[in-house]
Image (cartoon, rainbow, N blue to C red):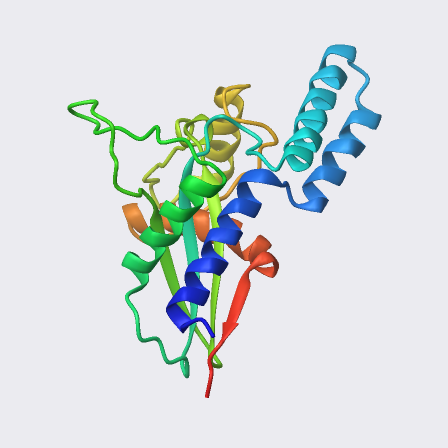
Length: 215
């Protein structure tokens, strides 16, 4: 029987593979509905190309995009969970396995030397919850979406909405479609960005893989 560590590696690698190959069903439905409702033929054609790409990726079992992104893992740790392994090094093993199996593109480079980074690159956000379960979900964020991220330190009386709408408008067609906006308000400079990612993950935690602890 696999150890808790081995089961966690397997679940994390499977979650990453699922995120690379398949869109959530409600996103696919939203795209299909948008294609039906769209009146502009060029826009309709582009949405159709996205849907065909999603279909082909699922049939072939290959990533939907050549930019397989940087994984961001969302971990929920039950207060009664008994974890006898290091989460960061275990996730690094899961990313390495998924890199070989999916496969994922090794495209991350050092920002100063521009040499390729051979170490598994990922981020990890942890939360504590009730119970004895350890759950993992993953968001894969490519450069197309990361490059249009924005953060502002607003004065107390400034309205958030104009900043958000202006950011989306200026981004235009640069972020990878379909576009899902994650919004974090409050906290610190770095905490606000994590809130935005966490907000996105809350919508999709139903896709997480829970691990029950053995007694």
